[in-house]
Amino acid sequence: MLKKENILLVDDDIQILELLQRHLESMDFHTFKAVSVKEALYILKDTPVDLLITDVNMPEINGIELVKYTAEHFPDMPKLVVTGFPSAEDAFSVFKSGVTDYLTKPFTKKELAEAVKKSLVSVKPKKEKPIAQSANTSNGYADMIGESEAFQKVTEIIDRVKDNRATILVRGESGTGKELVARAIHYSGKFARSPFVAVNCAAIPENLLEAELFGYTKGAFTGANETRNGFFQAANNGTIFLDEIGDAPLPVQTRLLRVLQEKEVTKIGSQKAEKLEVRVIAATNIDLEELIEKKMFREDLYYRLSVVSVKVPPLRDRKDDIPLLVNRFLFKYGVEYKDHIVQIEPQALEILQRYSWPGNIRELENVIQRAVIMCDRKITLKELPEELKYKIDFPKKGYQSLKDFEREYIQKVLVHTKGNKTKAAEILQIDRKTLREKLK
Ligand SMILES: Nc1ncnc2c1ncn2[C@@H]1O[C@H](COP(=O)(O)OP(=O)(O)OP(=O)(O)O)[C@@H](O)[C@H]1O
Ligand SMILES: [Mg+2]
Image (tube, rainbow, N blue to C red; front, side, top):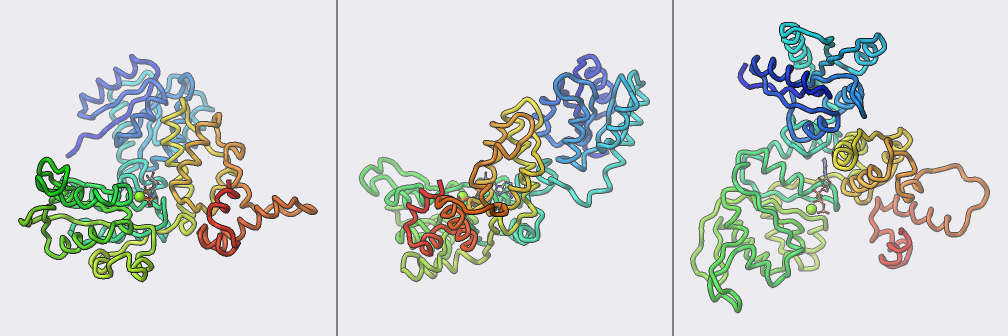
């Protein structure tokens, strides 16, 4: 055995926990202890666990719920149940919930060793279809969820570019996960140990952006009291992520072009160029071609940047991924805000799958976060925002009010424009602000 396996032990009885720990560590396993399901969830959130050993009867949430939950979120993780009260009913529901083996207290060290061995072996081979691959970090792209066909094109490109320094342009609507893609490229590739420096070109005032990116020498401009490195120097050997590149003013674009061509940076106020090895990933949610036409973006820079271009699909084109994403966020916010596992009613999930998500994954995440805070044990229709529900085509009963009619019509237009509010406002012949007010 090359690596020590991580075993998570869950029992409200500390003595049993310690006994299990002693036995398992003597067998050369690494163990984590939790006295409640809630604590176990915290551990699962950050730690790759190879085997779960849990008690059944515990106050608050019992072990069966934990097994069911992990069966969904960590399908590849074997689950071994230990209990002092092996009722037939328990045994039945435990096995149904996807547990690998069952051990009754008291047990000998030998029985434990055999059960652990059997569990670890039993699950390993069937790795075909992980449900929530990112919940455990076993996939390369730690935080990224997506199995849909549309998303697979993205992961294929990531695989191809992660180990070289080709410049990459990531496009996609707001909230689709462009930054996450950039991080995945960096952290899954061969330069992962070097810095990843993210710069939001829209957030830094125009007159400062140049100095911040490329650095400056003492006296280069008023206020330049010392010689300073910029983000490019900071990212040397690693990756610089230029978010919202469309907002970079033209002088910055010119300098950037030179950096990409010459692979060297010259600080503002200096004559001396410094050699750099930096991979540039740029991102945009606006159409750069349009900016080029308006002479607001340099065409030559555009071609330099888009050596490889990745389009992150909008959520409405990858609706198959919605349940996986929902699960992910239920887990994340359940652990953050609640003392118990949060679930979602099938009708509520159905609504989430029908909605068009103009704000993409960020909007979905916000909706789940809020719903987790507002709900008791389960997210129901009640906790979902009103506008999501309008999207459902309920059969019409008689006449509706003017307001409802207007709302429905606006939604229809938005569906037609695939959530593009600018286009919708054009069709409706109102300005964007009015549309925004109405959407509220
Ligand atoms: N595939 C994914 N799996 C899980 N979470 C995701 C995924 N893609 C995006 N997210 C989450 O959605 C949110 C938005 O992602 P991100 O910031 O990368 O989007 P963006 O495209 O850069 O948006 P913007 O254009 O508004 O800057 C983040 O909280 C991110 O963690
Ligand atoms: Mg972003």
